[in-house]
Amino acid sequence: MSLSVKHLLGIRDLERQDIELVFQTADQFKEVLQRPIKKVPTLRDTTIVNLFFENSTRTRISFELAEKRLSADVVNFSASGSSVSKGETLIDTVNNILSMKVDMVVMRHSASGAPHFLSQHINVPIVNAGDGINEHPTQALLDAFSIREKLGSIQGKKVAICGDIMHSRVALSNIYCLKKLGAEVTVVGPPTLIPKHMEAALGVNVTYNIREALAWADVANVLRIQLERQNTPLFSSLREYSLAYGVNRRLLDSLQKDIVIMHPGPINRGVELSSDVADSGQSIILNQVENGVAVRMAVLYLLAGHQQLAN
Ligand code: CP
Image 1 (cartoon, rainbow, N blue to C red):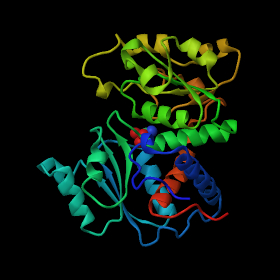
Image 2 (cartoon, protein in one colour; image 1 turned 90 degrees about the horizontal axis):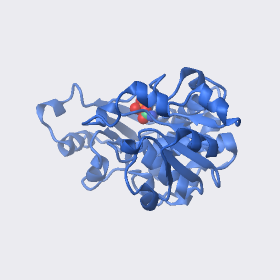
Image 3 (cartoon, rainbow, N blue to C red; image 1 turned 180 degrees about the horizontal axis):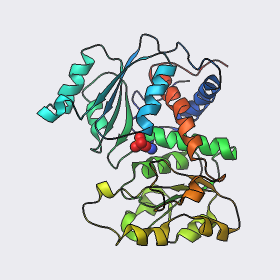
Image 4 (cartoon, helix red, strand yellow; image 1 turned 30 degrees about the horizontal axis):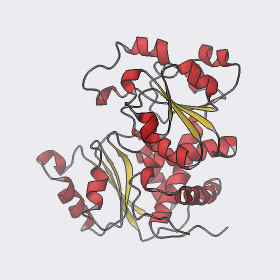
């Protein structure tokens, strides 16, 4: 068994079997990460460059840790402080780095499609670490892996994705991933933050009522409002948004059932999610972050041409 793709550009390109293979491999790396020595020699002699053209905390650290736990050599690149500011193109930047014998590229870019474009010009595997408003495939894999860990399976589970659906690469990758694994998905948010025709295009339910969505759900994945991607205001104020769509203790208590709370980070506390919920026993937010390392180890390992680890 090996992945059906050479690059991980998006969940849209994956088969269900690819996702299950990533999960089975991540299960084994998660066990490695519980050991006193959390390192395996698997990618010794492999050099990976992390190209971050956009800010990141979790994804960047998680990839770097995953690479180091696999014994890869790691090079980190940030657009700020690089020759990108002198006008160098994406292809020139990457070809210069690859000429130094780099074997794999992890890339985050603010332009949707940037890693797809790059994949047509270079020969080494590329992992998309988030491209504009398109996809964030490893986030969706770690989110689904975390739901599977918490609830036992994904098949038949009801997941509400809440908030700024329009600008969220996490939402799109989660929808593809959860639907391929047999979950039911509802998106909820203000009408101005949900693209038209989502039901028909992606097979999800749409509602504008947060209480209705949470009352239906087993899991709520709450998203940040991405003000940096809005050219014109799409709601009147953060306070109004929080009152209408914020997930807080009072709202959850009114459901009279326990649902699992997720958030990809970074959280705007008090806007889309209250602190008492984010830090409660219902939240698996830090489990998501922990699982990100094992899931990214699995992705890198499989893309490097390895098959599933032997038990
Ligand atoms: N979840 C996520 O992508 O977070 P960062 O932007 O901090 O990487």
